[in-house]
Image (tube, one colour):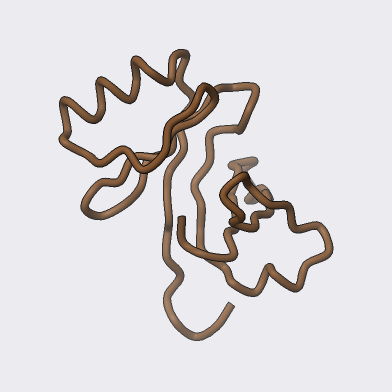
Amino acid sequence: MNDQLSKIDHLAIIVENIEESVKYYSTKFNCEVKHKDATWAMLKFDNINLALVTKDEHPNHFAIVDRSIVKEKNIQYHRDGIGYIYETDPNGNFIELLDQES
């Protein structure tokens, strides 16, 4: 990490039904749907993104942009080409490190 403050890119919550959840959040809170498929969706709010995920696809987590992970051997890539690594904090919470903003 560098000397700049880190940026939280998104929070991710597990939902039972992506379509139903997207409709609820986008209608009730007037957010932009950046991506949606059967297993996850990304919603853009004014100050943060919210990922809606199915339990078999991703854990509940929050994501922090950390461009230094591009040097890591265990980096993986999402369908949109964004590199990521999951780790846990001392309390077992999942943190997704991203090589760029989503």
